[in-house]
Image 1 (cartoon, one colour):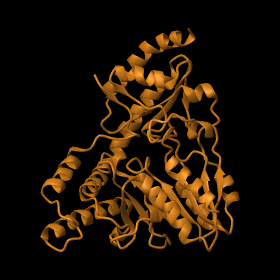
Image 2: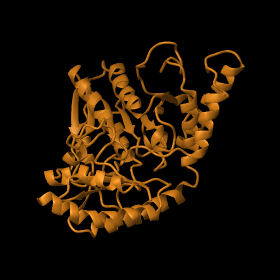
Image 3: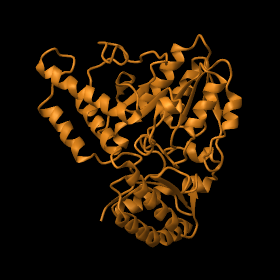
Image 4: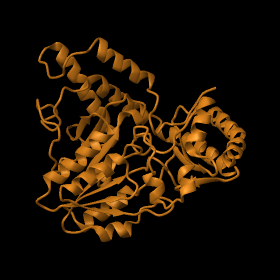
Length: 384
């Protein structure tokens, strides 16, 4: 049996996504900038994808810009906004457990003369709105937070944060990295006060190498990729039509029967968390299962290094993660586990289980059975 429980790293494509990607690669393969019929056909796929995404967010199609994925969307949101608004100020606020796609470009901006304030989170991954409010200044041009933490599933109260940010400084732009949140929550940027929203396709059963950035028409942002003037000059380069068409299809499908899907997902997560927490020397990290996102559980298996358990489970056909999968196989200290002040033993034994609408109870039962079998052996081996 195989159990794929690494859906925060990437997801299996919907069949309909696969079909439209193949069709736009093999049949309707024109360049959407071309003026002939093949180009017009290709452009139609891009427009339909923008429309489908805009409907899920209740925003305008012209506010959707396609990118190469979540990392580009985050980088553009941060660097593009910082440079466009530098005359107003150079102060940016973020949190202590952001993904590297946010924390690394912010470190780069710091080297360029920007001041970065990092708001800590507590042991459950909760962001203090009081500390956020206290950090906002007249020269604060940008606040950037996750919607859902990718390693532990902690959820940031983005609507409350947005109101606070805009009440304190109406000129401050609020960016949300929704790469783990889009598809799991109904997100309405205009109602919630979100100015910029980053999304990645392959987290929602779409193809890899494509994503989008929602940019409110009120936001001042510089383009990062210059060239042929595609996407209204905001993001040049030939449109990735197969990727965009697949993303549009995935965005539409992921929100079909959404409440029912999330109820099922949360029930599976609760079941997994309960069984893991009943095991000897297993600690659930981050938010309580009822409080976190519906698809992520992070647990430390004390006495066993995470890589050892990961590869042992892999031999059984079970796929999980030891932290974020976006670090190019480099095993560094987890920013999220460090942010919640987890001790070294918990950090070094943490495993992330992440589910999707394709996950079954049978997969979870098989995984739990194998963990119960191998844990005593691995702990005994580790002592010798």
